[in-house]
Length: 337
Image (cartoon, rainbow, N blue to C red; front, side, top):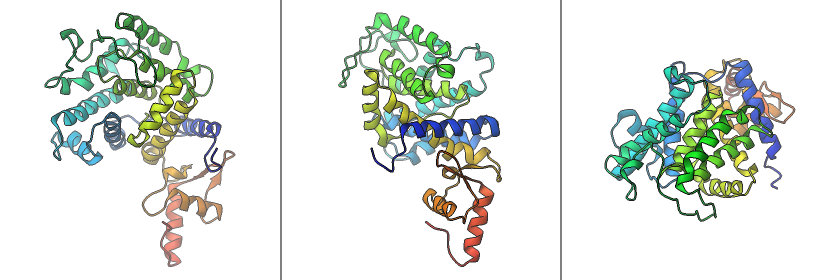
């Protein structure tokens, strides 16, 4: 193992501490009405990366422009724009449904109807002009598939389609039994098993991966946890982790998901809801002028007012960072890059 790479246990502990801070000190995730710009940032990134994982070539700037203005930027295929637009619509529905479900609320963590609605939102823009060539009229966006899915290169074979409704219903019942909230083992590994189990069912004729990631984020946000964004550069690592999960090793996928949750907390959520005096991880305080490494160095030398937790992670506040920046400028030096 790389000596500089944190252990899996330390990553789980870091996530637990960050979630405790979010829930106990900061009041949990904000609603969209409280912090629209936070959810917009997550929305853009998720729509870009989740479609790029499966071959979409739109860059982040093109996705942002499309979702914000409903106008295409660049010269990509109509299908690619429709994929991004569909994912954006589905993610918007997921975040709203998770935080403010209104009449949709059943008291359950997830329902079959919600899973089908996510798939419909995701697929409808593409299906309007480019339906799956093998799909029947009954396999439009939303209904479960009626085709057997070919085995995957990694060896996983989804169940035959007549078995899918019962298997998906059993998965929904399992999630609603509380396995994510109070199951055995660390949260990321429980999440990894839940996500992999859903992916193994592959209930729709197409776009199961994107649907599964959106379902996972519906569950996370509904539990007041940050959503997950798997970056396009992590595609090979994610596929390898899913392959290991197929044979019962959920640790690599759990680590990937834990890191993604921590990243979203530090990049989007904590900086927006923590007041200037609140202690947060240094990753939530870094910017173009001061990297995490520069802040860590300043903290270790006593130049930045910060405290080190028992797990080795440094915490500081926005006010302390601004004071440190001012002290360096007063001394005639620019902040460290």
